[in-house]
Image (cartoon, rainbow, N blue to C red; front, side, top):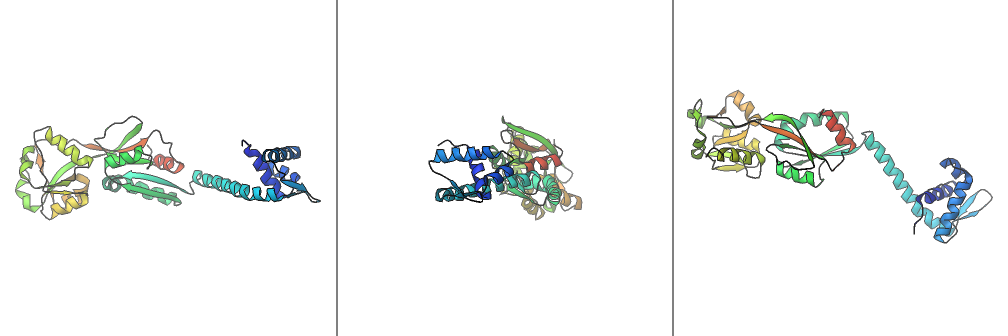
Length: 294
């Protein structure tokens, strides 16, 4: 059954107003246009929908049944329109972000705070995970954008932009003070008790690949899921920690940890904001990215 939705709109107003004339005025159309639409709808459905009375029109029993459904549908449409308007005006909506502890703590959090203060009606949902997991969620459309770290497998259909640099370092506590000020060969890491991230992280893969290219490797005594905890293990002299410098910076400045020096430096990496070009941004995510001035 192929019936114009416009007919149902005219039917809804005529039933609501109990008047063809008032329905025409509400819709800013002529009275004959409303009458013609209602006749066409009645013909298509094979039943009369209205009878005339002294004051205007009255629904037939069949019309009452139809009106009950049309009214609910039309009101849902109007509610949807209001919701869309609220989202456009940033009164409601949601931002879905994929980020690691590091990208949240050392880049994203201040921006999220500023955005939330300006748009308190927008819900912020953060899926916490390493770079590979974030990229997977982005490819499936489960997040609006991701904050990841390089190295990153470049994939067609994704757009990325660098937002800040990060530096991987090895730090240690008082147990290893004899190494302070020494210039160490990378091969010396084979003999040290290293505490580092698990293998599923982009940071761990980056460090492993860098060392492998120089004929060196780490054989971790302890592998952990978070960099904050790695620093805590180093503070308790449980090993030499491999972390992004930002995590250890307060302790380096306080002198409770020191940075090991090697024959060369690990090249700096980038934090990058990545979007899926196939997914148009929501009003909320577009406004947030605009706030970042990206």
